[in-house]
Length: 303
Image (cartoon, rainbow, N blue to C red; front, side, top):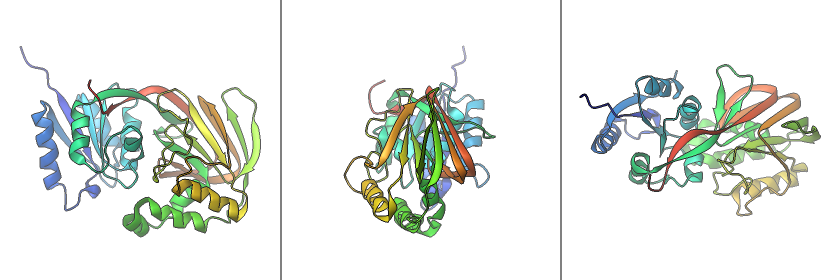
């Protein structure tokens, strides 16, 4: 009787591999083969940041997918894998690596992350799906409109290459004069909350690159999304917001927080929007729905 294939796909962002992918490929495929899997090597390209590679992995029968890259690559792969029932292993190689940090996957020890990806336990987590996009957009960490997206838009690529997430602080300072915009936030079937603010952030995972938590009560597996409406009154207020982000206060004080399965944010004017650090088209609306337990992720622990 034929032995069923056990395929483990490796979706790799080659731009994150110092000195090329040759040595990395040998290391990863050898470890996968030693664990009893048949490795399937798939590199991202300028035209496919991971979504197509993940789809190919599923088509070819992979029963485990490992992703080597940063938050953007992880978002592309998880968006495709949501609902598949195939576990995902995280091999962090970016500047933020927020999902990995939140789930306890080491971000500076590739060997340790690889052992977890191959031998850890599967944890179901929620995924957030954005309505009205084609193709469907999803995220696992945070999506936002307004100032936080403007920070990502305005951070120069050379700064990000040199400074990592600290590059966004300079962009934040440059946007301190950004005016508030009218916002209407509706959670599930509740009444609308109308206000003026500079940013609204929907969180499934609330960890910031500084190690702080935007919203300490957020859990990635409770089937609920949290939305923080952040004002920061005037320049002094926004300096306080920045201090909350990079300091050790553990939360944003100047924020209104709502919770639910569907978050609908309607804006007075089109605003920048971002999902896990990736910009999407500006719009005057952001509608996000929770997909409870849609993604299996390998985390530390015994299966």
